[in-house]
Image (cartoon, rainbow, N blue to C red; front, side, top):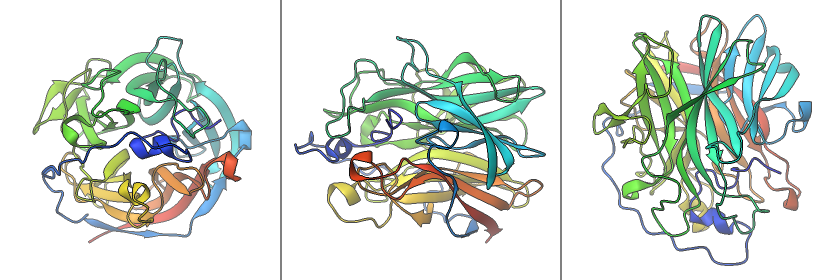
Length: 392
């Protein structure tokens, strides 16, 4: 079975009837909100992409449905070590390069016990190192008691939270440390009838360029205020290791709300794209360009719901001088951004620079040309394209 969030991840009501014969619950029209500062500005870089390549086939090392969060590099050299969410847990891959991954260790981080916020899913997405300890953030899903989606083979809904885990053996084993970001809206709260995903998840963490803060980016699924699913941000002082209770969410221009249950304001709002949604942020800092670079998914859900055809959904890029105010997202390539039975999908992108470079490397992501075993499709697996960033 696919990871227990695949079809519903960041989905709107239409995913509840993907492949189903019955009608879905009606979705209310969303008001267009004012874009955040910088949303009208173009990105400060151009990106040149090489051709797409399958880097690790489905089923290798026993892994399927991966990467299901942004691939996370623990060390680039002399041996590449990279974490990928696969099915409902996290695996470690090792090799000489993304093209030559020769070893796999499944289940280095697994879902929690019944009643825990990660009872259904635990996928690492982002990590930072302090001495011999690596601190990773992960997407946890509480799936208990949530309705299953019609036409999806029994995949449940979820309430997401961002957890923290640590490893001292290079990613072979992890200790869970607690929760660092949770939604302002609890499990069970709905912005509209039939909402099937909620919470806060798909995180990414890095140290700010000036060394002062841990920046934690995440996706809010609450749809509070009619804003849809959008990318938000929290931060904590980098004078201490990342820890539960240390993070403050960005809200109305300041980091003033607690990471656990506080309110938030999106840093990247895709509603200008015909009420589109932004999700799955991954951020790197290019010292050569003196810019933060974010890759993300942008889902223009009306393309599927209203059968308009694929035109704007896909993998996008945005840039920032300070990691807080971001440019308008611009497309890297177009593909369905959310898994739908019988369709292609490209999601959870990550830029991985070559050792010694901050402008050249790989764009890694999960992809399949056709999702859904019932239609003869293949589980999504690791794909990549060479990427070169150039300042404008």
